[in-house]
Image 1: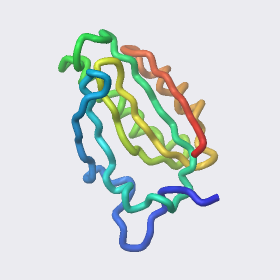
Image 2: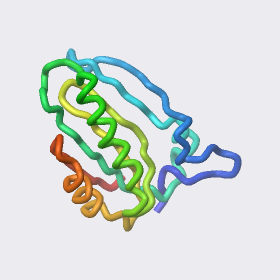
Image 3: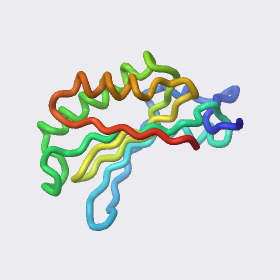
Length: 139
């Protein structure tokens, strides 16, 4: 099956942390911040990463505006933990992160065989400040 993100000769490394782009917008009257891995534009239409995994962290104080600095630190720690440990469960690419006044969602693209359940269980066991929700879908 043809996928979406396979590296072609001369293209940047998918796992580089140097290619993130921040955008801000509004959806249904709510501010939304989106960080995207800009390297992915070089790989669209050519990959083995055929499963999308979303890790959603609902905000503690929903509807209270964007997270305060304390909660931002907690959400950043959870995101770092997910990014740093995802390789133990299979091959994955962190594609984007969404933050609004309701949640933070991290979107990963993974190869077949990635242990989504194990990844989710590990995050739930290590995170004691927020609930951790997970969803996977084939592209």
